[in-house]
Length: 512
Ligand SMILES: Nc1ncnc2c1ncn2[C@@H]1O[C@H](COP(=O)(O)OP(=O)(O)OP(=O)(O)O)[C@@H](O)[C@H]1O
Ligand SMILES: [Mg+2]
Image (cartoon, rainbow, N blue to C red; front, side, top):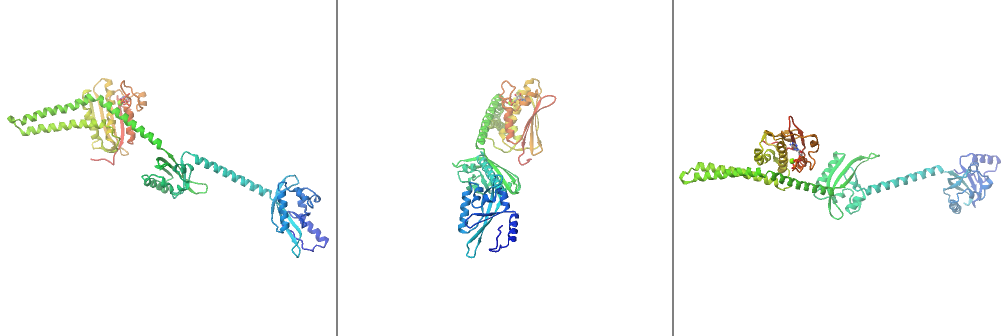
């Protein structure tokens, strides 16, 4: 606040005294200086602040209270102001009575005569230490924030995933450095919907559909798809994202895409070796059954030979009887089919064909297995009780694999019952439709049942209590049932024996 004297208006001692009183009382440090920059007045407030006598400060004495670091700058600006007569505020540190330097703003104004020459300079000094400190703190806080932002950015960029942030409209507004490096482009190419350029063309329709659906009606995203790497190779990724609302109420999606290519490959080769193992196990089982199977095929073959002979006899001119010959020929055809079916069943079971899920009639598939085992049942004196659901059950599954599950369970039951040596050995087979669109198949026996130790490890690979057992039968059963989306369980039944049950999903309902 400048205090201007009216030029030549202060003649009376009284008014001068009053003016001095005013100047000393006002809550600011005030001063005046000659046109050449020598201090010729300081008010009481100023003297109190500096804690020095007026004499020590007048003239050029005030230079001593300027902070040594600021002094050259302050004096240069002061000189410039005087030369140009262009007043302006300047900031610098002044020494307080206690020796501490405080930030202040210095303002000045010239008093001019009629020709525009400077008669005197008047000024005030305002302490701004507190404001300055607040400013410093703010800037420190700001740089701390920047540093922590840089840190977070560094972390996000180095995460071993393709991290992203997207707007509610589905466009990406951020992708981490790793994403850009993976794709081999600048991050800006991936932003908005740019990421589509890097997705596998075959995956895009599904990926976009899932993403759009998540945006519209969900809080989470889960998705699998292939992303093209900088070298042109497409790799499988698992996308997971989540909708968040930040502190300002802004909705965003954040997510990470994890490279699962290697995992996927490992899984595929695991499946492959499991299939191999299953095939070996099937062959072994079939090998064990060879005698029975041969016997089983032999029966229709013998019948064919007999009937063919009969047929020829009735065709003989001496006792020609066309009707009887036709009947015998029909029996030949029937038995031929029977033998053919057994052989086809064996061939299917031994085949290496990969799993193929399709609607499969369960009873018909099982019938082939039982046909093949018929001889074995008779040889081992095993009574088979079947209680199939009284309609045909169409399940979604791989025919051969489901046959194998039944074969393994039946083989186990037979082997278990042979241990006890006491006929009647009773095998029970049943199927029923259960809740949730599943079919349950059960294989029971009256063997020794399962003790606790066996129950705990039944489905473990290579767990076997048999001398020649591989311990893979049930492991294979479980992996097949799992792959079908069903479950397999084992339990004891009273008074003795065990029952194994597995479920498979029905294919689009029941036929017949
Ligand atoms: N019906 C059953 N009654 C009693 N124990 C059983 C029955 N089924 C399986 N087990 C027990 O579970 C074990 C594991 O069966 P799994 O079929 O996996 O192997 P395995 O029959 O021993 O050998 P393989 O690989 O030749 O089938 C068997 O060794 C046996 O101890
Ligand atoms: Mg077995």
